[in-house]
Structure formats: C-alpha cells, structure tokens
Length: 273
Image (cartoon, rainbow, N blue to C red; front, top):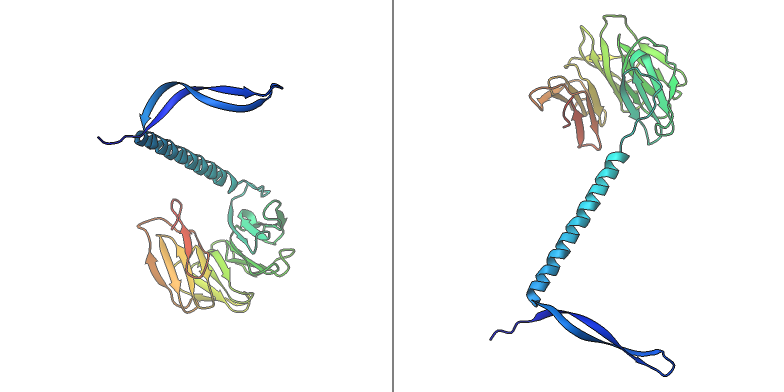
C-alpha cells in the first residue's frame, strides 16, 4: 500500500502547570478534536497557489504605482508669459535654456523653467522658428523674412545678421557646433536649401537641398536634417551634398534630436521615429 502523508487541522487547549505562587511554570498544548485532514501534496499545491497569487498582486500594485508616478511626474505646465505659439526650445544644461515663437518672442530660464524672462531682440513682429545656444553667452535665432539674430551676452542684447522683407521666405531652423560654424534651414525662394556659415553668421553660403525643418550636426562634416513628406537628409561633407531617405509614406517631420553620435529621434504630427 502506498504511504500517504496528511496535514491535520484540529482545535487545541492549553494545560497550565502552576507553582505554588500561582505563576505559570509550563504550558502544554493538547489537541481537543481533529477538524479535518488534507493530503500533504494537496496542501503544498494550495500554498504554492496562494504564494503565486500574492506575488502577482504585489507586482501589479508595484507596476501600477510606478506607472502613476511616472505619468504624473514627467510633464507639467510652466508659465511662459505669453499666449502666442512657441516653436522651439533648447537647453545647454538642466537649468539654462531659451525658447522662441510668434512675434519675435524669446524667453530665457536659468532655473530649469521655474521662471522665464522675456528678452528684447529687435524683431518684435517677426515669428522665430528656431533657436540654438552655443554656450551660456552665444545664441542664434532664425525666423520669418530671412531673419537671423544673435546674442553674445546670454540674451541681454541681440543684433541682426540677416533680415529681409515680406515675401523673402523663411529660415526654419538653426544649428551651430561652435561659435563660428553653423547651418540654417532655408525656405526662401529662389535659394531653397541649407545655408552655412563659418564666421559666426557674418556670411552665409547656400547649398541646394530640400527645405529642412530641423538640423543636427555631430561635427563639421556629418549632419542630419528632416523635412516634409517624411524625408530624412544626410550629409558627410559639411552640408555641400545631401542624400535623402523616406521613412514613412506620408507626414511631415518637424524636429530631430540625437542622444549620442548614432541614436536619434524624429517626430511628425502623429508619430515618433
């Protein structure tokens, strides 16, 4: 006959052995009556099931709590001081950044966005679509009517380096790798393409290639651009020549950003790549 082990459940009572002074010297528990018995293997399976359910509940609670914290902690509204559309924002570190938008609006923060200060730039009626700080002092911004402005003191004062009139087109974006060398996306007839400077914006040379909405360069030769029709542009000779690649069937790309030399992201109205 096969031996089977059982787990017994029973009521019990305690027998007290007392000293002459009435203090407990010994407590002995005795079974009063057996309530039920369960095979040991079934009892072990039951305990394993309870343990598994508890682990799953703990994981669900942990994930739910983490998700709520992540969702609520990542994004919150900051007061910009304007109701006008804002088109670009760039930071040089966790505290110092600039933002630009309609009406030539430029604001700066030095405390991670807690407070923003408007900066006067001399182009109050011209929408600005791109801004790029080289360091804490040198910042470039571009926009409507072939506008290019620059500051060399962190935005306390700005001066114009290029400016046109209504109908002259638009500078869509700007990227500098140092205080002298930079590129500008140019949506301005008849010289569509990318403009490049090697003297801090004093002179601009045009290289015909699409109409980029945003640009990124990791050095003086290698750069990436994005534009309408889901196109990604690439240059390996400083912007003189560009190759094209279409990532999706439709949709315009507006911004591109890289976290290192090889890994980057771009976004359209409805998707991130």
